[in-house]
Length: 306
Ligand code: MTE
Image (cartoon, rainbow, N blue to C red; front, side):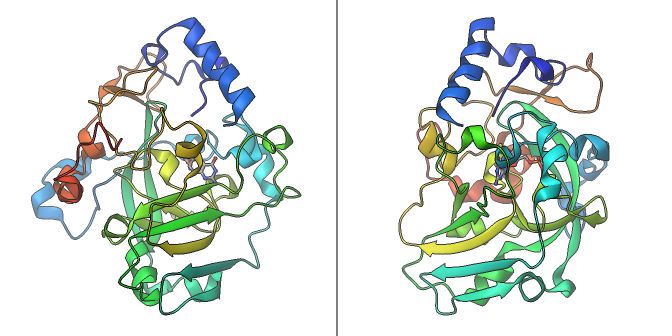
């Protein structure tokens, strides 16, 4: 969400429509806060696509992060997130469901359901990665909670503890905790993952340990980190970026090359890790997962519900 001079090599210059946009975005943020082919199970219809998914070098995926609770710079989360205590970790499941509960992480994650999946990951800032995640279907925990018939959405919250999260400049300017949400049918989709690891290891703190969401057909800001609460609701829950800057970031945030951000195009993206001279590549509708999730949006005007 933040485009900075120090990241210019990783951010496509044409995504920043002018130097003043560049600075405005920086200033605005300062002033106001601010994947997926499953590599298994669908081998036949996906054809050669899995071979496209060469993972981004691990040091980039774990060193170039957005986790604003720990700072504005892409390198801040890796520098500061060691302060996050991820054990013990409690996840509250509440709202419109028959089985609300406070889970310890160990009871929440069922090891037998954990699997490795390599997904494309497309940030709204127009860079992308390919990340081998480890996790389990979000649908599993939703089914276990038994949502009520009236539940239409699920809201997520990140831990908010200023003692562990030192980015003090942001405190008054953004409505912490970081919040996200999905429509229940999106959340039930088999591609939606709760990740506990990446690159075959436990999730590093800067990537959202001990538990984060991965929704590979949506912009990365939907993939909320360090989750402590899931709440079933009847109405669309408020989410951090859509509340903060509603003309720029919507609730749906589906990757869509035809719907530009007000200040840059989303038609192309820069895959990280390919060198500064690497060509930007066309962005795919729903990040390339249209075959899997396109039916969720059949009757929607995605320009309106961006
Ligand atoms: N979750 C929390 N709690 N705080 C954040 O700042 N940033 C989001 C998302 N989840 C964010 C978050 C954004 S903008 C992106 S692009 C991804 O995390 C980045 O994930 P990564 O650092 O693992 O690449």
